[in-house]
Image 1 (tube, rainbow, N blue to C red):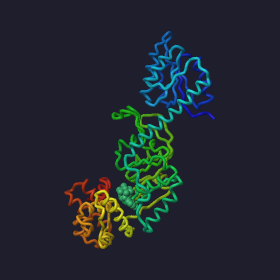
Image 2: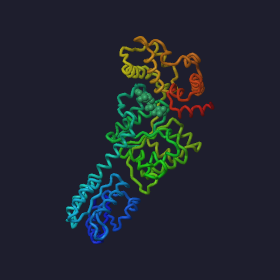
Image 3: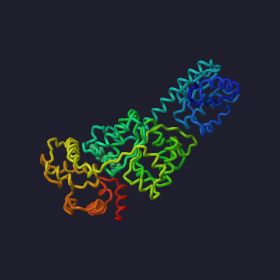
Image 4: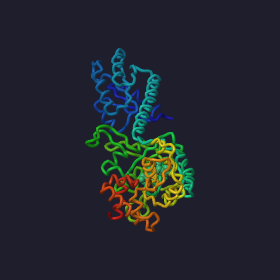
Length: 456
Ligand SMILES: Nc1ncnc2c1ncn2[C@@H]1O[C@H](COP(=O)(O)OP(=O)(O)OP(=O)(O)O)[C@@H](O)[C@H]1O
């Protein structure tokens, strides 16, 4: 079995090249040879090389290594993680040492013994692997940003509706199946996606979160698939995309219902082939990822209206999890309030704080259009406003306008209530979208979407 590695050898001596190729072809999957160093950049356009063997002197009679240094620099400009082994003649060892200070990895003396050459290349390959891994992990860490320490134990709820969700998570997590999570804003879709990752066989690897609603049409490909330096004006250096970062881990595509049809087509291609190509590059990379998607949009209706591709839907919905809204699990409200009360009482140093039992019951009657996120913000607000050890008023949780304009139990359709609520919040915030979205526990995009829906 040959070791999978791309090797490139550059030397002006045809015999050296041929002999090296003949031997190395038995050990490695791909060995290219070249006499003319000026052709090096062309080779890199077609392939990524794991190890490059580079002669120090090309012009006859030259032995100052000048050209070797030049091409070493050029290679490192193309791939900063390149592993270059210098081919040096006896007497040039000082030059080789100097070159190593400038980024070469090792050197071999001509004429070499095949086994020695093999050993040098194999250890260089090890280094290449760990260098690539370090870059990938650094980028992944950087992209993660968000606190990944949410644990499944913080997944509060005992209602039958949420119990069904937990059972499904347990069943599906270890299977590697693609999962689609559907549900209103703030119902815990992202929490479920993280829970699936944590319980999966990939839990030692990264969880990459991509908010498709927040990525502009123009940056979509570069964000998802990466780009190479110079691919467009702002591409100052090579950058891996989110798919590449998710290699061996889980990729969570949130707000998938927001993608335009052309972008759906691009995404579908990547999902089908499990391969990506950075913008501006010809090289395809195979990526191993587990896919979890989420949306609050009615994808099946959208397929019917030809706003969402049916083939994409069938690619992502191997297992479907529908998140119940908070209204469908009102028995969990006291548990959630107590949970968030513990969190915020600690944060704001109000350790003895409690909520009056009657208020807890009243909170069950409110309609919570922003679901758990709204409840979470409501509790935080109540904790901040509280002056005594017990919270005794509903207004501490829900702003007075929301409760006085409309009695809590007034019968209305859900849509009407949502529309009124948005209008009212907008009025309260003098039309400020950011502030309104925050109060409602929605993202700005989600608020715009809803305003659109209600013709506001
Ligand atoms: N069962 C739960 N127990 C505790 N906290 C929860 C639970 N479900 C959701 N949360 C919390 O509620 C907030 C909203 O959850 P999350 O972001 O997962 O919702 P979402 O459905 O992805 O929202 P959106 O559609 O707006 O992106 C988060 O702070 C999350 O930690």
